[in-house]
Length: 157
Image (cartoon, rainbow, N blue to C red):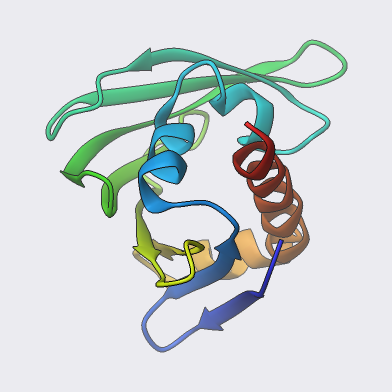
């Protein structure tokens, strides 16, 4: 794993995470969207994740189920707004137990001349309360752990 960065932008209501990974953009894009690999890196490590639905096309839906160690389940879901393979994914996402709190996530895969790829994830919040709530739930640490797992899969898969 190479460089990484986590930035909170309260003025634009965005959280931006950047990571450079030893892999090309095509492979990263595939790993980022592969229903068999998503459960290995998406979400918190203490949760079991499964892909319930993934219609990887603009206007298509996605839904990931997560289960806690005490077997409580909940889901994240959204709609793909833009997909440009292998460089960009934009989708909405919502934690289903909290309807009305919709976020917009963008993942950019910028392949560098040395064969590594700079991954930039941006989450756009619609209000300051949602931004602060997510940040207060240790978002930086959880995001770092999630992307550490993603990078290891990408570099070894």
